[in-house]
Image 1 (cartoon, rainbow, N blue to C red):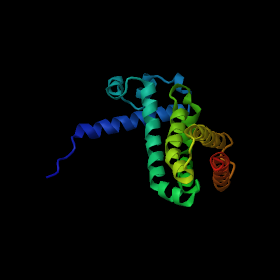
Image 2: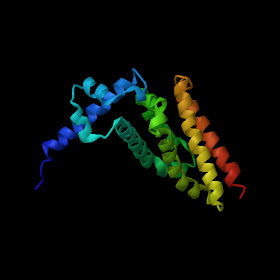
Image 3: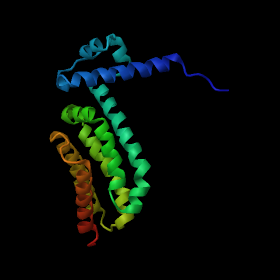
Length: 197
């Protein structure tokens, strides 16, 4: 016998969704540090008590928006990691990630531009780092863990910086060229550092 989820759960999900939507709408108009709880609740015609039922402050709401995006990115990585390992190329995992970013480019740009209070870029870099560990271990079997750590930090900062710059330039570079450049950069750095061990 299946039990229906309480309507309160549905209402809670709807409230959280509306609060996130309100924050993203306001981020198109002003910087994150200028947005108050009142701004968000007035925008979405909700009372402040509803906000505080779900989030202690605007930073927690911002981090929740970012977490949704990071979870989606991780699910795309998981779906394509086997193919990436087998092909020894970044392309199988980087292309769907870029497709996701393109489909949500306005929201992604807002998060990149308002990173100072939430640590979004740092968490995105951590996602790249954590997924890169197993990939590089399988491909290179590195003997020096310190070199692997340096390389992964270099790659994580580099790929996130590449995407950020792509946004800043209005995604003028064709996606295919960006993927090819990222693949060459990552493979080149890994080959130089890890194949010489």
